[in-house]
Length: 320
Image 1 (spheres, one colour):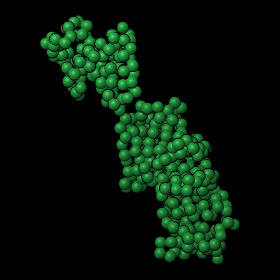
Image 2 (cartoon, rainbow, N blue to C red; image 1 turned 90 degrees about the vertical axis):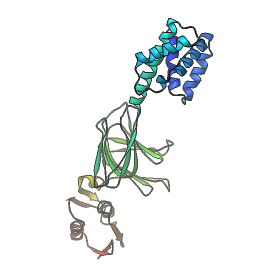
Image 3 (cartoon, one colour; image 1 turned 180 degrees about the vertical axis):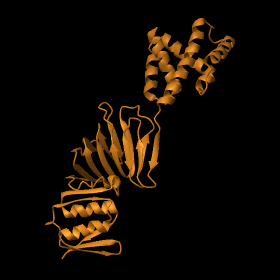
Image 4 (cartoon, rainbow, N blue to C red; image 1 turned 135 degrees about the vertical axis):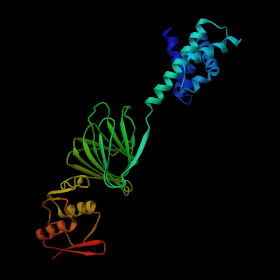
């Protein structure tokens, strides 16, 4: 009896979702295993075709639908109308309705969000927080009921503060790569065919979609990946300015001056042209909070023997 019930449930699932090839193979194997199974399958399909209510389950009144189905069965000559068949009709309707409700409630829908006017944020169902820089776009699920919590960073920059969950890893997909974490905070910039990944807390795994080029990063580490050159560069994040777009704070500790200018380019959206070597200037220490670029450059000029001039949209740096 239990086997019949399980087979019946499979048949109803198959009729609700005929595109499931794996389920179809199971049904074919089981229905051909015995004459009883084949007979049950044929009768359920017959009942299914008699009852359009089962195939349109937005608002099913099971009692009325079963009554209507019973009247139809009385008029049919193909099967003898029995108590068992009447019960099966009710079961088909109930299982069909239950399966449709379950499928509708558990279906994951991906939404897309773009930060149009400044920094924007999203809070996922598990309290994971995602901050988007202006112009950045992300695709995320409306609910988290799958084994893996997955989002897609389509473009731009985002900071993730992931709620820990050891049994449900958090994955960020970017083109042909992915970042996997259990619970941590990190920043990703996806621009111009390159990924910049910086970890603030915890541990993060970066890998290509095919599982190759795997790197494990911990707090304070960063990674650059070039999709065109297929090249990975790992580094220690000494500038601490990766998260400046969110915190409005630039914090440099023993930072090489070349990295300082690179951070300023990203934060202020300007371009530097460095005409001389800065290799001897490798321990810049300063903290800036809501300062203008002119104020920052004034401090650098007081600290090092440099001339700083602007030509059009480019700031030229050279030794005195």
